[in-house]
Length: 331
Image (cartoon, rainbow, N blue to C red; front, side, top):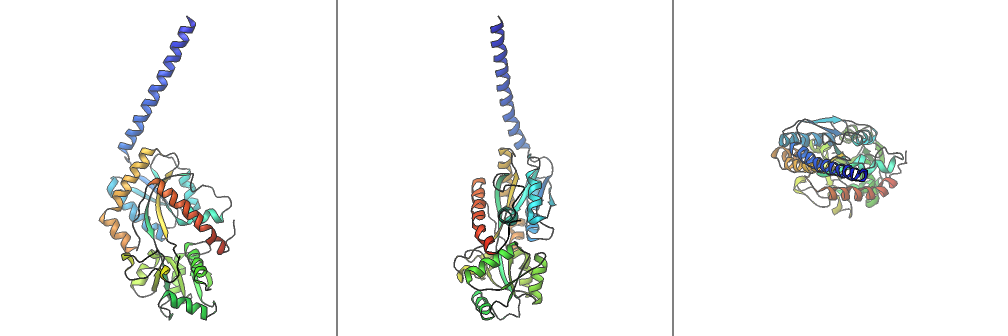
């Protein structure tokens, strides 16, 4: 009798467990069907006004329009983007906190920070890229160099007594410049500034002679004639940049552009990650986003989660020798 009761109770427990699992699956599906039903916070691990922030805001507005819910930008700058990425890692994985990730924190910081508080490949759910931003090589208008070849020859003739401005050690503009000098076999004096704005301003003023920096930071200055663009970091010419040649036409193998992509905290349910990607694809197809990205000289680029993860993995590997060449020490 006791054995029979035990079997019955065990059977009831097993049946209950089956119902519990069955009930959980429709709940996730229902959550994804209803998602999003309230505002979404988008962490931007960069300061307001930065090129990454500008693109994030254009994207967030498009995402707001296609989702029907407000996507609110939350700037969390600090430590090269590490602060914002850590906050994103620890956020509730419910789809209502997402991260607008970019180059600095995901592929540069891991090489220069010894105790990084997050793992770029393990602590997030990958959604998709949404933009590729070329770096543009610009010179002060008074410089005689009107092409990449002429800039290299000018720097060689001056025995390195030419200033290259950057947004600071380890910044994208610093590493892009180091890579150019290494592949182009010439030298310039690296002059770091506290941010992209001051570094670009130094080239406008003629304090520095050149920099290679994210396109959104210099697009308006190029149009107004305050800077002269002589090349870009995409592998080949692109209608987005008109007749501007790629640096690779003169320096074979040169390619170093920034990127923006959408992440969610690890553990965010797959149906919600999939819904996020659906919304992202709709957002990048809107005329408003296309126009906004075109004005910022940024390519629209999307992929799936596996491709995005593979992309970041490749970028991490390729950044290692560049960081080493820049002489950056692990903190």
